[in-house]
Length: 345
Image (cartoon, rainbow, N blue to C red; front, side):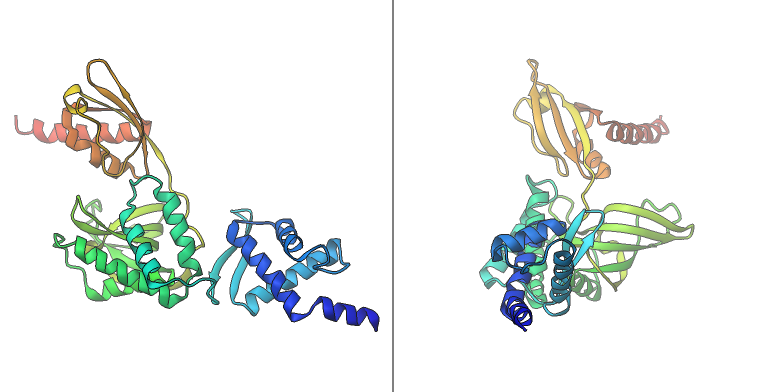
């Protein structure tokens, strides 16, 4: 009788709730294994958080707490083998709310910190975590405020973007849902739109090119030749997207890490003498100045295509030295341009 009473006290609703909150807070800090979760509970609730149970018995009670968090609190914590620990995949019970002014600030930060901004990945990872913990209607409010900013920035965009597509994409970003759409790219030699299945992470307006884009992780595409696995980020121009549909799959807690390609180039003295500007899509890490006024620039880029496009306006005043992928791409572009102009001779 005494042991039952002790267990009843030990597993009171309040003590269970405190253990569950300790687990949630630990997973919010980052991926954690079972020992990390137990340690977090014991540090907060004391060594008797699980009574006298130890070893396998304590692990079983931890699993029951994880089940309570999923079933009762609506916080979907699961073990991710690739990440190597427990993570929060989604939250049906919001863990956070913020005043409207903070939501407006989040929208402004998301719009301001473009892909080539310093600390872009770190800033967007933080904002993504805040979004994950907010109620769906508050996520939608962020998207509404971002839409206002995008419209203000996008007066020069002449693309025809159907309102149904824009609204569906807004909903997908707010609900963190995977999407499927037809995409017409000038790089498709067959001229036929291909179907893409994509995790949408960011909608933005490029002030240099004057178009709206979706930055998304493409899983695969379907064209006349069948299915083609992708597994990388693509920046989709919204004016070339059609028939967007929301899929039931939810986005993972954090965006997949983007590849970082090495960029190394040399600027002629007439271009570098008055300062080295930051090309769109390239993060400059180091600038080495030479006595003749030229400069050697080291950096990195997430997209070889956009890195090459950023350096082409420099013309003959820029010589790409590396990395190997970017240099090969620039050589191919220059070779094709030489063929075009050779035909005029």
